[in-house]
Structures are given as C-alpha cells and as structure tokens.
Figure 1 (cartoon, rainbow, N blue to C red):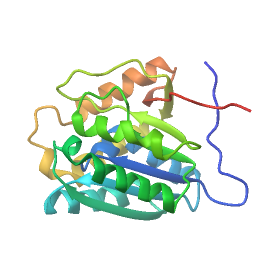
Figure 2 (figure 1 turned 120 degrees about the vertical axis):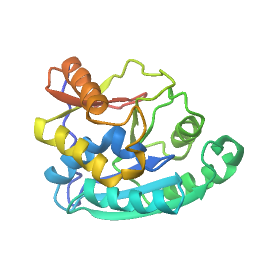
Figure 3 (figure 1 turned 90 degrees about the horizontal axis):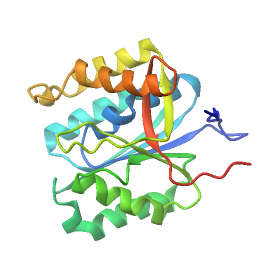
Figure 4 (figure 1 turned 180 degrees about the vertical axis):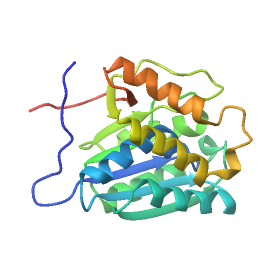
Amino acid sequence: MISLPLAAPRGRPLSVLALGAHPDDIEIAAGGTLLTLAARHPGLHVRYVLMTGNDERRLEARAAARAFTPGADLAIELHDLPEGRLPAVWAQVKEIIEAAARSLRPDLILAPSASDAHQDHATIAELVPTAFRDQLYLGYEIPKWDGDMTRPNTYFPLTDEIARQKVELLDKCYPSQRARDWWGEETFLALGRLRGMECRARYAEAFTCTKLVVH
C-alpha cells in the first residue's frame, strides 16, 4: 500500500469542495476527513453544496458544516431540489455543479461514489467528472439499506479521537435522524473500524478514486 500525502499547494491554503445530495451525507461519509483536514491545514477553504433539504434539515446542515470544519474558511450553499427525485431535475443539478466549477478550482472534491445505488447520489456522481476534469475527486460511501457497499481503493486514516468526535457531532447536529434504525455509534464506528483494518489503521474513511495522475 502506497501513502500519498494530501499537501496544500505552495502559497495558498488547501481547498475542498464537499457535495451532497442530502443533509448528513457529507458528514456520515467524510466527517472524519474534514475534521482532520481542518486540524492539519490552517486556513483550509471548504465549500459545502447540498442539493435537497427542508427548513429543519437545512438548519441542521449549517450547524454540521460549521462543527465539522472548525477554523476553516467555510461557504455553505443549500438548495431545495426534491429529495429522491434528482434524476428528474438532472439539468438543475448539472447547473449547480457547473456553477461551482466556474467559481472555484478545489484541490479536493468529496462527493458520492459512482457505485452508490441511491438515485440522488448517483446523479451527482455522474455529473462531477464532467464538470471537474483536473481535480482530485474522491467518491465517498454511505452505509444504508441498499446494501451497495463496494470495494474502495483510497483510505483516509482517522485517530480514535477523531472517529469518536465524528460520531458525537453527527448525533448532536442531526437530532432529526436519531429515530432511524440505522443511525448511531455502532453503525458509524463499525464501518470506520472495518475500513481502518483494511488500511492498517484503527479507524478510517474509505473512498473510490477512478483517475489519479502521479508525478
């Protein structure tokens, strides 16, 4: 296994674009990564773009974005497209993603994986590579009923402290989700422990990278 450090470009802070279909997608899949990057990279630039969410969920998403990127230069962009119907508003999703591409060139993109079975996630995953051709795109995974967990090829190790902080913040920031049967510490830490085992770490978040240039 080869380790490649995620370094900030010379002369400016690291920049991250986090794309999600729903509030909580980004934090479930990459919350530990964001917490770690915020701690490692002073002045980290982060832009959140979410496609769906009602008023309650958007308030939760704003709080979560701030909690998971402490000290970062954060911009939050929330939309109210119909949840579960993103394929039907494909053109609007495409315009949102392309508008982000016109306004910034992030060093790292965190967005759903192309193998994600959820129709909303899959729509975003289809469009990201068409708008961003020269950025590192890591497709994240979200545990859910669909049973679509696949074999990742990129890992971001997490310390015990960060893994548990992630779980605590998820529960704190998203009270609307606590009643769901899949929500909770067991689910999130179990997946993190499994992915950590795969990369010889205690905990980790896993991603899929379909194209990478090494030089």
